[in-house]
Structure formats: C-alpha cells, structure tokens
Length: 129
Image (cartoon, rainbow, N blue to C red; front, side):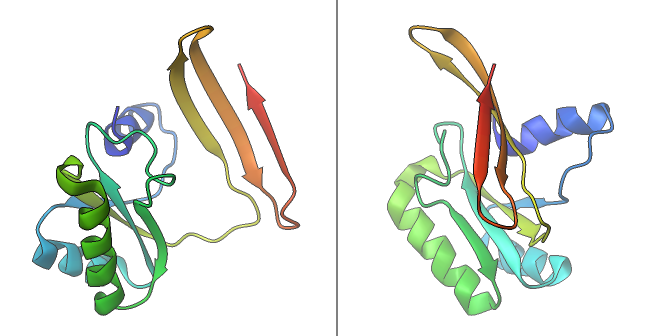
C-alpha cells in the first residue's frame, strides 16, 4: 500500500501524520513546495516501489526550487516509469523518529516492524512482531 494511502487510514483512527501533497506535474510540485514552505522532503511513489529510501527516492531538506527540480530529475532517471507521483512534505524536526512497516517474508509470513529509529545521540533499537 502506498504511503499516502496508509496515512488516509491512519487519519480515520485519528493517528497524526505529517501533512503532505501528492503531485505528478513539475509545476504543481513546485507550487506545493512553495505552499508547504522550504525546506521540504520529496518522495517518489508508485505501486511497484517498495523501499523508497533504499531506492534513492527520498530527498530531505530541499531548500530551493532548483534543488527540488534536480531531485525530481534524479529520481525519475533512477526509477524510470515506476514513479507515479511525488509526495511533498515539510521537514519536521524532533529528537526521535518512529518507523512502522509491514512485509511478507517467504519463511515467516506477514511481519510488522516497529522501529523507534534514531534518537538524539544516534543510538538505535528496533522491534519485529
């Protein structure tokens, strides 16, 4: 399930998530960045893209329209036709991050991952259920 669709489900349960805009046209991407306010996070999304970060489809801390345009070009070259749209999000700062994910392992079946991520001193812990 794409990230933006999962967030719609979270919203139904009043789970707060970062606000974002989904766009595919370059001019609308730049407009969304202006409305969001720089710096922004830009993510390439598509039905066949499972691991955005590992695929180089997440760019954090873009401060100008030129940086956004360069990131769009780079991601499109990297992922070819797999990118269906881009998510534009504000950069949110904090002392911790939290990651949740799910995948189907051939040996264990469905696996849900909760990863508290990095804290301020860059130590990390993870949990799988």
